[in-house]
Length: 316
Image (cartoon, rainbow, N blue to C red; front, side, top):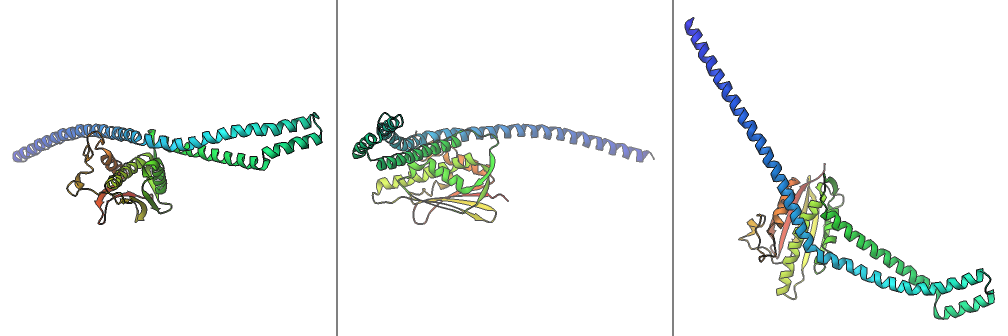
């Protein structure tokens, strides 16, 4: 009986020691888990800060082009308003005559004579047509400026809980509109499947595509500077593969040195001269796409240039 009691006590002591050890390990694991969650939160905040910082750098790159795109419609708005100001005087002459007739200051015969004189110098049909054309032009110019500014604001301002559903074509169209000035020297082809719905932060995805297209345009322009007859081309496609949206940006530029292609997504790695690149462009792209549960890769084409491939899950 005494032997059984000793065995029981040894077992109880071992169990108590094991429970104490388990409690200690659980406590340490909990503390480590709390610390890990804090670090993850810090990393997420740092990643957001990096994306916003790169976005501001991109805005600096876009500013000259955006200013040029706004100046074009502003120029013909100013010109049209000058012309419209001159037509106001002509319209005023017709209105003065009409007012005199209404107030019986002149009779119908005198009115007819004065109108005939005006018609010889100012054709009412031409005046009406010109005013309509000028109005349409001014409206078109204002809409174009409004669209440029709206796209820029949509891209620039930070979003809170900006996880929404949208078409892949929206991202492509807004990106190319933002980069219109930078892409005008390239033959750009867009081939996007309709109703390709993805979910995520639209502004950040535009940021990723902006970075990719800017790199592609710079590669093509560098090649153009050494080959005057070279015709730069850029093809942007979006298609569905299973439950995945696949974006491809293909250029026929200089391509990438095979020795460094594995490093292009590394933070702070840049092949550009000092001061011309942050080295964070493609690193930010990698982070944004990863946050959307997707992948991004880059390969040289067999003929010329490079292709960037982005894969993002579709909305079920």
